[in-house]
Amino acid sequence: MDGSRAFEPKEGSARIGPNAILQTIAVLDHCEGQVVRDRVMSVAGVEVPPADAGMLPEADCRAVHDAVRSVMGEKAEGILRLAGLATGDYILANRIPRAAQAVIRALPGYVGAWVLAGAIAKHSWTFAGSGKFRIVSHLPLVFELRNNPLAPVFADHAACVWHVAVFERLFARLVWPSVVVEETDCASTGDDICRFALHPQGLSRRNRANGI
Image (cartoon, rainbow, N blue to C red; front, side, top):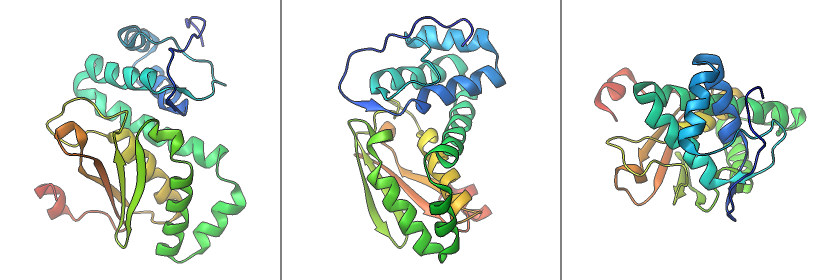
């Protein structure tokens, strides 16, 4: 990318898929411009990876997400949500075969959701890094991510909007168009884990107002 330096990833064994950074950079470029993007990357202390980068150190990914929160303030969660949605779009375009997508769409809702959830669990190493992902239940569908490497250290509300957006995009495109993913527990607020509940028909207006 223009203005980027040669990429030298930090050392570390735990890694996360490159879209945790690449799509964040793309959203920053589109919404805020390269000057702001370069400021975020400077605060993160991370160099801009190439478009064809492989798995990246989770420490780099976390640093970039933390820098977005630090630099962007109230805009941060919107930026990270857009980056999560874009990551979901990338997965649909490049990682899930078209035939498999057609099969999932043709299945009854909950069956398709179980198939997709199983695929996500199988490939959870690409977004969980050193954390541990598992499917807590199928009815309702609930995910759990222990030691989430991208969760901010502290927040006064559930703050893992990037993961929420990735899950939401995948399930909305393949299973439930009106799905809402709700982070019911978050390590950033002092909970032991990050837990994500999927609501096939969305949350009611009353529930949204009450934070339920």
